Amino acid sequence: MPGKSRLSTVETRLLSSAVQVAGEGIAILTPAEEAIGPRILFVNACFCKLYGVEKNEVLHKTLAAFGIVDRHHAIFNDMLEHIFENEPFDAEATARRKDGAEFELDLQVVPVMDSGEPTHWVAFLRDITESKNQLLMLRRQAMFDPLTDLPNRMLLFERFEKAIDNARSAKNMTALLLMDLDRFKEINDTFGHHFGDTLLKEIAVRLRNLLSPNDTLSRLGGDEFGLFLTRASDPSDVAAVARRVLDSLQQPFAIEGHLVEVSASIGIALYPTHGTDARMLLRRADVAMYAAKEANVGYAFHNQEHESQTPDQLALVVEMRSAMERDEFELYYQPKLHVNSGLMTRAEVLIRWNHPKRGLLAPGAFIPIAERTGLIKPMTDWIIDRMLKQCREWHDAGAPVHVAVNISAKSLQEQLLPVKFQAALDKWNMDPRFVKVEITESSIMADPAHALAITSMLQSMGVRLSLDDFGTGFSSLTNLRQLPIDELKIDKSFVMGMTASEADTTIVRTMIDLAHNLGKQVCAEGVEDELTWRRLGEMGCDLAQGYWISRPLPAGDFLAWLVETFWGLRQVKRSLRSVAR
Ligand code: C2E
Ligand code: CA
Ligand code: CA
Image (cartoon, rainbow, N blue to C red; front, side, top):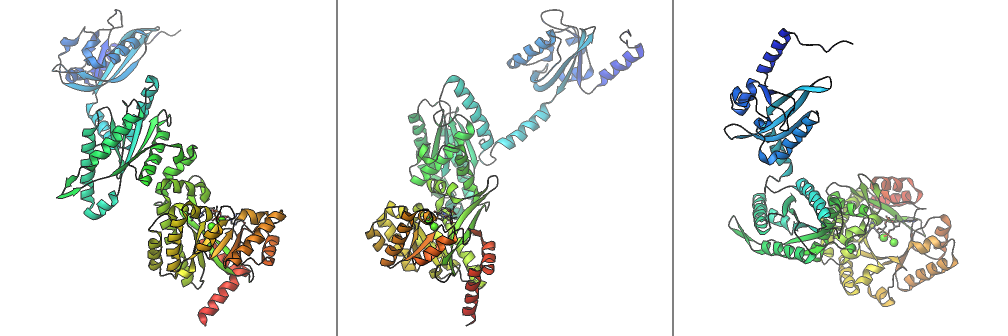
């Protein structure tokens, strides 16, 4: 068996001079023969420079000579443990020079083994203060908001996760509050961005002073702040903090010679009541914040009613907020045909969401959420604008398409709807007679007096009205007569049932007659086969819409359909003829 190769004298000398001139501190130690561990046999020049010592000051000393500060005694103990187990060790710790100055030490200790026993230990020591500071600075840049110097969203999240872990083991409660300023955009637009930035800084200072040092306050971006409380013992404490925050913002801020008052909305989610992980709680607080804003109540706790429970829907709530900016919504158009002539008269506008991960989403997946969170308002504004823009393009191209847009109950409650509608009509120079608004029975019934006021205003502007999903609600005859409705739309559940059920056929026939008796047009939706189409014709139904005629189509495909199909072509030809006349 070949013996262990021994170093020649020359090699030893070479090696020792290499060690002597090495760029890092090197110490050679005895094995750990005593309880206090190894002692120093040799140190190189760099080691002396690192600690500001002479060689003889450290020779035969214990590892205490490495100067690891008392507060890092755990690291020191860990090192000794490794050495007693003959295991290599490395760590970073704060160390002290002879003159008392501290530095960040990178330390590596490796055994030199012979026949399974360490004959020596070699320690490599480096001052990493500078690179560590650079790292800290980078981390700071990545974790703190440069404007307010508060932790940013990432750091809030990281700390919140830790706080949840602690709360879990201590069986405590933790509260997350998300705050969004009201009308901050207006302030920015009126006084300028510099003013807005100063205001955000002042808000940060005021809130920081208001909160206890244990609470983490963070700026999440824009005019959104987040904070979590680790010392809250019950929801009323948390509510009190929310009130204090809102009150403090109401004291005017003096900025650049102006006095501004700020109001805000706060959403609150509690661990463990409202969720057990940071992501879920963040979303829930976000949804609650929107609910608070919508209801204008200052603050709101997460509430099951704000959302349905599935995390999927929670994710949608959050994603929907930026989807508009990212242009992920798209309008589809489904033709409505005149049954008698078979001509295309108008198109119903149906929104879709091109979700980056989930693909094309139907409105059923997000309109109810948009309604609950108040996002339906900006969404409806967007829909009206896009639809009229599209209409303008088609008209300019010689296809005078009429459009029908769905207005949800929430939007119908908005006082400004008629004004906004008029502004959009003016913007795109569209004749209101080409536009119809579809309102469901149930949204009218939610507040009939208000619905009457808004629909009357729309009517006086020249916009037509259609009562959607007719037959599924409980509209009274009085309502049907009073409301300025031009058209009843028979709900697709009856129409789709016609081929299989005599009762549905009777209901559809009765609805058609009722509409005509009231002097209104009637439209059947959900026409899925030719038989239904023919029957509707026999019963005198005015308009029909359904997959058998065409599915809802993106704008480009819709125009292509219009040119290609029998129904559409005649319509376009006719329109072109009338343009020529
Ligand atoms: P709605 O107003 O009753 O719209 C008709 C729905 O029936 C559409 O579903 C349409 O794609 C579907 N449909 C049309 N023909 C047929 C057919 O032959 N068979 C079957 N099974 N279905 C057919 P969609 O696009 O999923 O919209 C669902 C609902 O979402 C709409 O019901 C409407 O209440 C709402 N919605 C759609 N777009 C908008 C919008 O832009 N704003 C608002 N507020 N609500 C919208
Ligand atoms: Ca509709
Ligand atoms: Ca409908």
